[in-house]
Length: 296
Image (cartoon, rainbow, N blue to C red; front, side, top):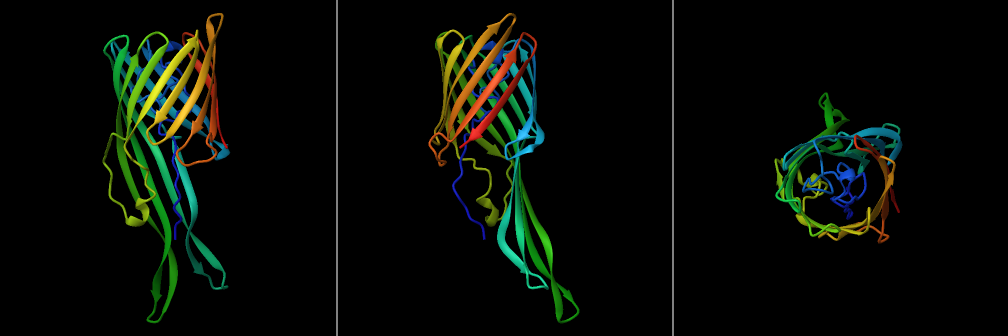
C-alpha cells in the first residue's frame, strides 16, 4: 500500500542560482532549467562543468553536468550531459513476508528519476529580442519488490522474492522569448512542458508516481537599479517563484559575483521554503562558482 502526498517544486530551478541574463560575464551561469530561451551572451565557445555533493547525501559527490555551447553569428547551440540530475527514493511498499521464525520481512520499492540529456537553440533577431528552444530527455524506473509462490512437489510450496520493474522515458520540449526593454529592464516568457513525447504506458499502480508534466508557463523579470546590481523575479503559473538579487564587483581584470535567491513551492511550508546562494569568480577566459541550497 502506497501513501501519496502532494509534492511540487520549481521547474525552473538552476543549481548556479538566478543571475541576470543581460550580463555577459554570467553567460554560462543560466542553464536550460531557468533559461529555456537559451539566451546567452556568448562570444564563441562555452564549456560548463558542475560537480558537487548530492542534496540528501552530503558524503556522496556527483558530476552534475557537462555542457558545451557554440555561437554562429545570431545562432547559439547548446548540448549538455547531466549524469548527476538523478533522484532515488527507497521505501517500504506496505507488503511483507512472514519468515520461518515468525518474523516479518518488509518488501521495498525503489523509484529512480533521471534527466540525462539536454539541447538548446536560440536565434537573436535583434539586440533586444531573441527566441529559443530547449529539449531535455528524462528516464524513470519503478522497481517494486513482490513475491510469488514456487511449488515443490504436489502440496509444498515456498515464497520467492521477485522484482517487477517498469520504465518510461520521454522528451520534454519548451520555447522561450527574451526581450530587453532598455539597458536596465528585461523580460523573459517561457513554456513549461509544452511538448512531451516518447512516453511508454505503465501500470496504474505506478502512474501516480511519474514525473508531472502539467503544462504551465514562467515569467522572468530582471531589473538593474544600480550599476552591476540586479533584482530577478521568476514566477511559474503553478504558483512557484524565485526572488533573487545579484551583484558583480570589478577587481582588476576580473569580477566577483554574489547571488542569493529565495524559493517558494506550491505546497511546501513555510512560505519561503529555501534559499539558494552563489559566489562566482570570472575573467575573460573562465569562471568558477560555488553554490548551495538550504531548504527549511
